[in-house]
Length: 127
Image 1 (tube, rainbow, N blue to C red):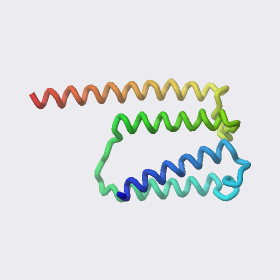
Image 2: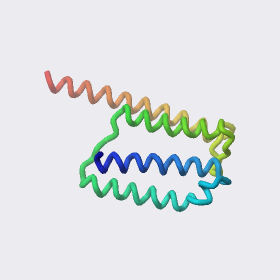
Image 3: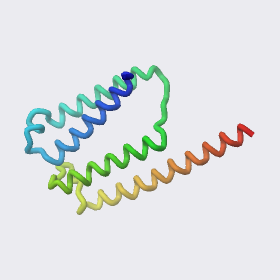
Image 4: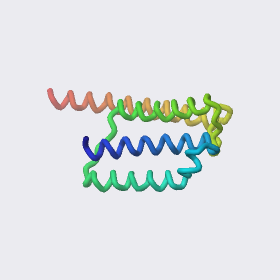
């Protein structure tokens, strides 16, 4: 398994732990791993990911971008439905939730349009 794949998976796991810790602060997990510790680990993992990339820029594919976005929103919804309450103030009753959903929808539309433009440009270059 490649180091970048391991780092990406680790970042996803600690991001999930941060969300769970935010929604359920009175659990054993929150006592063992505080938000500060998880944030420090996340920052270190991201720094390692950036430094091991060695200057190569890899843009997220459209599928990966949509997947990460849906995972984050889905995690937020599932943790709320499980009875968790965000300490940060993220909830269905909050207008911030709906503003973020609208912004994410617009961003996904932007990524979709950009992807179509790039495909059209690539097709034009081939002809």
